[in-house]
Length: 388
Image 1 (cartoon, rainbow, N blue to C red):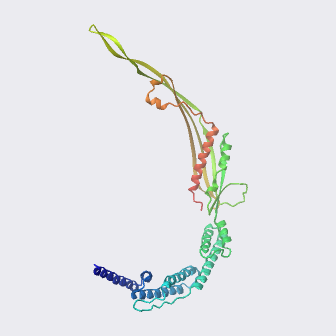
Image 2 (cartoon, rainbow, N blue to C red):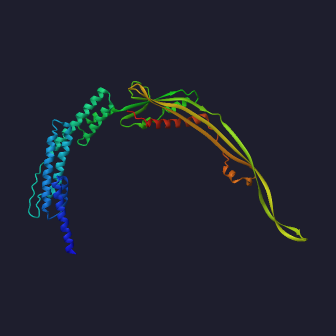
Image 3 (tube, rainbow, N blue to C red):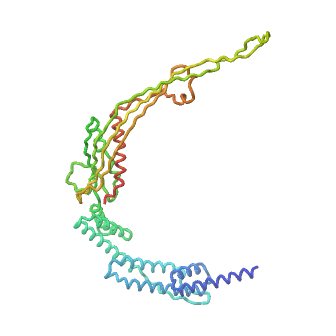
């Protein structure tokens, strides 16, 4: 059994050596490098095949990376500095993975040769130039946004400037420029109310609408506010809330009376009867007819409010959306009582019994409910709009 086991181990070793050689032959140097590292780590007897594969893969990878850096020519194409930085970091990382194995000598005495360089200055220089590129690009986009009024330039500027944070903290006046980009890139949306409700409750409803929690919709690039006294503030969109009309129906009450009756067994009693001239004792049932009057009270009152939401694009001087908002509120009160013998009630009537009948809501109470529903619908519609 041991012979078979060692035979399989030998076969696997030969196959794995061949596989790393194939990786090198195919130019899969990254795979060959990582595979060889994994096979050599922690091994006292280091296979020559892996040592040579690692040596060749390391050399090839560094040569390829160096050539790519030269082609990128970042001094004339500063947009390539970030890629150059990535490549220098890759080479440094590759060396860090290799260094614990050095000096690397195989079990056959083969000594691998690796050129170990210090890339710190190259990385620092690349970081500085990368930051400078993002900074200049962000600043130029801000200037373009100021000149053209296009908010997208400001948003792009902000994203360029945030890239610096991954490399350097407090780089120049990046934070000030980011704040400037947000200011230029923000879309300002204001709400206004036009009240045409010719009703006693119209004023209260308007006040309620003015208290819309529009600030909950705020994010980095959108600021919502209610129209205030400062009319000089330049806004991008105006959400005009038109309150058109409100109606309340009369209070309606309807009573439905009906009767129910039932024969119920009162008792069973024994009585003497003559049957064929013979006295016999028989049991008789005594029944009684009972009645009950059931009264159902139905109360209803309806209210409705109509309006619309219109969105005006201040830049293009046009309405871009108009959404009707129609709110309905129905009050329904119900009570069911009875007079008479409860035993006469059917199961259906028993389930209806409810001695309390809600009072009619006032117009003011219904107006408050309408206003709340109107606000919720309005906020839902506003969330659907892309203000850009």
